[in-house]
Length: 312
Image (cartoon, rainbow, N blue to C red):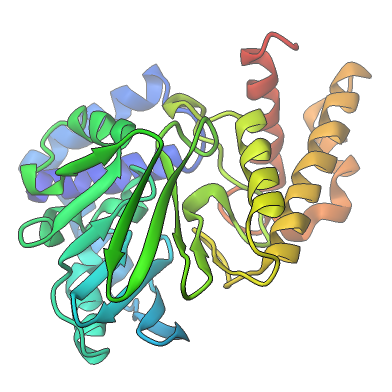
């Protein structure tokens, strides 16, 4: 388990900095071998999370958002028990459970995964020991491919397109968003409370990460955002995968920035500009590159997405 945590944290670094190629896989292998003997990365990971606290934001009666390290967690606490959407990194599990207790909740009865990245499902191994994990079919398939992952971390219930859950007096619609951030993205709509958890289909105020190695596409990401803007209630509260709680105008703004910057990059590439020149063209969007997807990484994602589509 210790070695898996070391590899887990290292793989998350590679995933959030772009594609995992042969060189990175080789580095990951060497890291794993070193971890078997010394496990320095585990100690570094522990230090990384040592000062992280979990904060709670109430959204509606019995409905909350938890922030800490990793993706935003949606929480429902009520007569049926506790339900969470995503569970951040593995070392955060104890602090998440303490935050749930402070809200009057218990260990989660249901755990919904928006996708398979470890900053969203790292706590599965712990919470899956007593709760039922639900996710899209492709999430289970991709987690099955993770070497050393405990069985408790795997979704027990999967779905293809949509599924409805009735819990704590709420009707929750789990809706698959295809070929966006990954090929297994789920958004969760609390219909009564009028709250939508979008997972990493929304990075509020920042350039998004498109996991092109896991079935994500820029076209799909844009289409999914358009779907939310057009189909969801105009006054809905939106929980992003990362960033502050949002609304439909904020989603529309993110969509506009993605579309505008993509067109700027495509035109610049057609004009023969190099990456430094393209970054200068995007200077007015500098504030959107303050997360782990910098302007340079956003340009690289657009270039690779275009190449995969045969447009370069």
